[in-house]
Image (tube, rainbow, N blue to C red; front, side, top):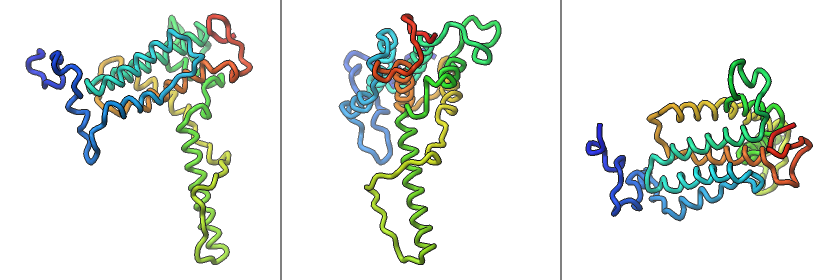
Length: 241
């Protein structure tokens, strides 16, 4: 099929329409069309640690710009996700040893792959659950739910008609609330998504901002600001001793 048979939204844009929003940009039931300024604000909030090396940061900025320009070309959302995951692999490869032990790298592999490198970084403590915004938010949500259930149990035990709960009051997060092992999920899901996109896929969704945020958080943990650097030594080439 050549370009003349494609829907205009999928075809090469004309100069007069190149900067117009993609027709699909405003197609959300029950929602007002997203403005370019609001779209920009969404991706502008996703930031890397300033310690991430410039070559990696440039590749990540490319992913952010692709996300921004997806307001004009809807399919750029998937390209942005692909670029972000490719940058994640680049960042891991620059940060970790060139060769990894089994089971992170199979015999005969010339270099470790994304899945092995990500698992290695997690097992070495370089990527941790507490480095992700959504992990903290989930733990806090579980703590609030636990507080509500405890209040209900108090009503039952003390035969009370009601118990006041201040939803604005700080809630103490317990180890039980923190039992969600996000990194275990990401060690499988991110390489799987990357492979699906890299080998060709008809997938089309605008819900990729979360992927870009996850990649930024992993890279920021791999290359923490100097004041937050842990006890692991980092060679001048960026790899772990």
